[in-house]
Image 1 (cartoon, rainbow, N blue to C red):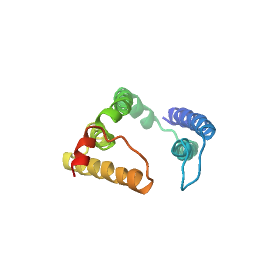
Image 2 (tube, one colour):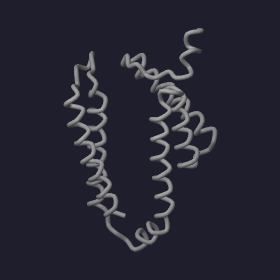
Image 3 (spheres, helix red, strand yellow):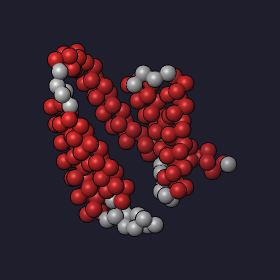
Length: 159
C-alpha cells in the first residue's frame, strides 16, 4: 500500500504544481480583488501540501504481510470507488451551470457521504445541506464570487 500511496501523492504533487503554474499565468490579483487564477492557485498549493504529507507518512510506515493481503482484497472495491468518484466529479462540473452550485454541491456530497462512504442517511443529508449552504455563503457573500444559480435563479428573484 505504501508504494501506491507514494505514487498517488507524487501524481497529485506534480498535478498541483502544474495547476499552480497555469493559474499563476492567468493572474492571481489581490485578496480584495482576486484574479481568475486566485482560487485555483491556492487550491493547488493546498493539494501540494496534502500530497507532501501523504508522501512523508508513507516513508514512516512499516510494511506488514497483513496490510498487503488486506490491500489486495480491497483493491477491486477501491477501483470501483475511484471510478465512481471521478464520474461524480465530471457530472458535478457538467451540471453546475444547468442546476446551480447549491444543488449540485448538495448532490455531490450526498453521493460521496451516502454511497461512497456509507454514512447514515440523516448524517449524509445534514452534512450535505451544511456544506452546500455554507460554501455558497462563503463564496457568494463572503468572497463576492458569482456562482451559477441554475434553476434556483428564477426562485431567488421572486423573493
